[in-house]
Length: 80
Image (cartoon, rainbow, N blue to C red; front, side):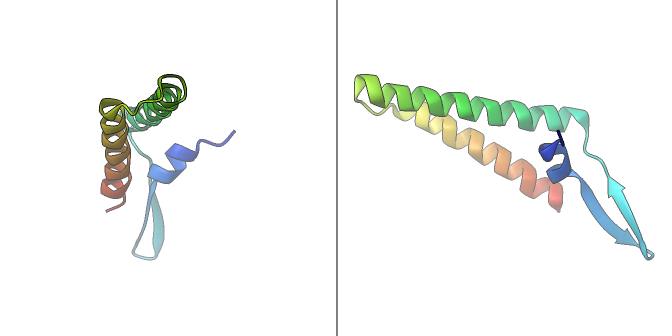
C-alpha cells in the first residue's frame, strides 16, 4: 500500500534542469497521521453524541475544526 500522506508532503522542484525530490521528515508524517486519526475519532464521537443524546456538543466540534485547520496548515505550509 502506497503511503498517500508521505506522497502528499513530498516536495518536488526543478533546479538547473533536474528534478529534486525532498522527502518529508518522519515526525511530520506521524503528526499528520495522528491529527487525521484524531479528527476521525472526534467526528465519530460527535455523530454518536447527536445520535444518542440528540444534542450538539460545541466543544467536540471546535476540537474537530482545530484539527482540520492544523492538518490543512501543515499541507499548505509544506508546499511553499
